[in-house]
Image 1: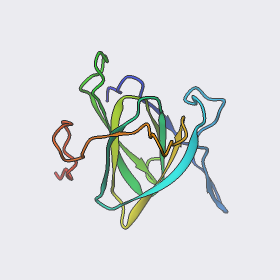
Image 2 (image 1 turned 120 degrees about the vertical axis):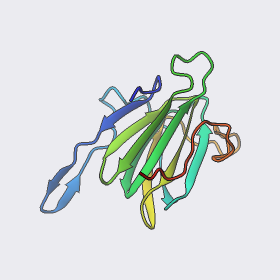
Image 3 (image 1 turned 60 degrees about the vertical axis):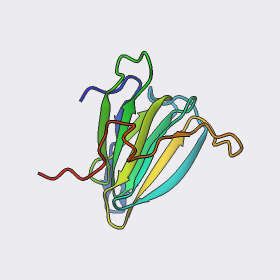
Image 4 (image 1 turned 90 degrees about the vertical axis):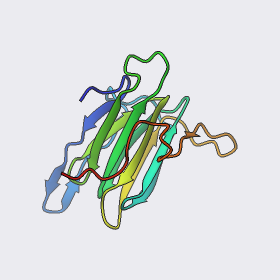
Length: 153
C-alpha cells in the first residue's frame, strides 16, 4: 500500500511471558516521536464509525490496545503528492501497530470487535476545549470517497 505523505507506521513488538505480555507504544527516542501533547483513551462500539475529522496542527498516534479497529486515512490536502490516496489499517489485538496521522489528513476508525475496542491516542497537542483543533466531515456524507460498509467476499 502506498502510504499517504506524512503517515507513518510502527509495528509494536509484543513480549509475552508467563505473567502476560508487554509492548512499548511510543518512545521519545525513536524517529516516529514528534512531541507530547496528551494521551487519551477512547472506546468504539462494534460497527460504529468515529470519523471523519482532521487537525491543522496536531499529529495523532493511534494504538488499539483491545479488540480490533479499521483505521482509515484520506489525503485531501491541496498540493500534496498523495492527494486522493486512501489508507486502510486493521489494527489491534491481532495486529499491534502504531499509526501516525499528520495534520490535514482526514481520518476515522470503525469498531470491528464485539462489544467494543479500546484505542489509545498520543497526540502532539493538548485538547483545547474552548477552541479545538478539530474539523469534522460526516462519515457517510459522500464528501470523502470511502465506503465504511463491511466488505464481504
